[in-house]
Image (cartoon, rainbow over all chains, first blue to last red; front, top):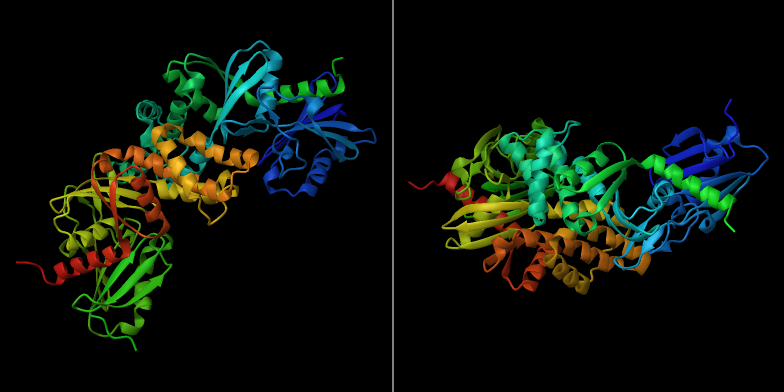
Length: 301
Length: 301
C-alpha cells in the first residue's frame, strides 16, 4: 500500500501530467505519470483527472497540491496571471487557489517580459528549483525544450529571457515536411553535426536554403539519414546560438535539460568554447515545487 | 460535346493534377483539374487516373500527352532523370516515354545542381515557357511556391538556382505550430508586413526568437491576427531575401507566380528597391509544355 503523502507536487504541461507524492520533509514517495496534458482538456476536466490520478491516497483530510505549467494558462484549469521581469521566480504565496475538494490546490504563475514580448510557464519553477540549491548563481540558464529559453539570472532574480521555437521547428520539419523522408532514423552523425553547426554560425541567414539542400543531397549525393538528421539539428541550433550570442558569449551557462536535446545544446556550446554544465531538469522542477510548497505552508514572517 | 484535342498538356505535382486539352496549333480547348496529386499515388494508379480524366476524348488514335512535375520523380509514375545545370530547360526530346494505351505519354525531366545540391521538377517547364516568349532574357527568375526557387538565366540556359523552404515553413507554422492561434485569419496588415520585413533584413539571424514573439505579443499586447500573419510572412520572406541577396541585388527580377504569395514577394522586393515584374505561372507552364510538345512532334533538323 502506498504511504499517505503530506502533499502533492504537479507539473501539468501541454502534453504531459506528472505528479509526485511527497512527505512534509520534502522526500518523494512515488512518481506518477499521465499523458492527459492540458492541450486536450476542457476547464472542467482538470479536477476529475487529478482526483482520479490520486484516488488511492485521498482521504477526508484536505491534501495540499501545488501545480506548475500550462494548467495555469488562460486555456487551462484557471489562469494564474504572469509576474513581470525582473522578478524572483514566483513562489507559493503568489499561486492561484482553485477548488477541487478534498484537494487544496494552488497553481503557480508564469513569468512575462513586456519588451521584447515573451512568456514562460513551468520553466520559472525549474529556475526556482535551481536557485534553491545555488542561490548566489549569476549567469545564464538555457532550458531546451519545444520552446527553448535563455534566461539571465542575477541576485536571485530573472532579469530577462528569450524564447526560441527551435524544438517545435525541428519536430515539424523532421516529422511533417518534405525532409521527413531524408531524416527518418534514430541514428546520429556527430561529424555532420559539428560541420553544419560551424557553417551555420558563420552564415546564419542561409537557413531556409540549407534546409532544402538536406533533401537534395539525399537525392543526388546519397546523404545518409543520420547525417541529415544531425545537420537539421545543427542548422536550427546554430541559428539559435547565433541569435542568442549576447546571452552565452563569455558567460557561465547552465543547461537545465534532459536527454539528447540537452546533449546537443551542450555539444554545440562546447564547440563554441562556452563554459557549460548540465543539470537534470526534472529534479529542478521538483525542487522548485518543493520550495513553493514550503513558502505556502511555512511563510516567512 | 468537347472538341477532340490533338494532344494533352499535363502538370502533375505532389498535390494537384492539371490537364489542358490542346489543338495542334497550340490553342487550349479546355482545362481540367483533379486533386489526385502524385503524393498520394502508387505507381500503377497514374495511367488509370489519367485515362479516366480524359475518357470522353480518347479514341483509337494514339493521343500524345506531355507531362511535367513530380509525376516524373523516383516515387512517381516513372523516373525522368534530372538534367544538370548549366542547361537549357529540357525539352520533349529528353522526355521519358511511358506506356498507357491509347495514350502516348512522355514525362519531362527535372533539373539538378550538384553543388550546392539542389533539384527542381516542374519549374523548369515554367522557365521554358517564359523563355519561349522572351528568349534573350538575362537575369533572375523567382518562382514562389511551397519550395521557392531563385534561378539565374543567361543565354537561354539555367546557370544556377537555389531552393528555399519558405512556403512549406509558413504552412507548417501557420497551420500546425503554437502560432496557429495567433495567425488564424485571412486578413492582412500591410504596415506590419513592411516593418517586419525591414527589421528581418537588417537582422536576419533572429528568426526563431521573433517567431515566438508573435505568440507572446498576442498574449501580452493584443497583437491582431492580421498583423501576426503578415509579420510571420515577412519574417520568413525576409530571411529568404537576406540569404538570396546575391541573386536579386541589382538584377532584373521576374516573378513567375500567382495570387497572394507572388504579391508578397513583389511587395518585399519592391521595398528593397529591386526591379521586379510579375508573370502568370500557369500560363508559363502551359507555354512550356507546348514548346516541349512542338519539339517532340516537330524536331529541328
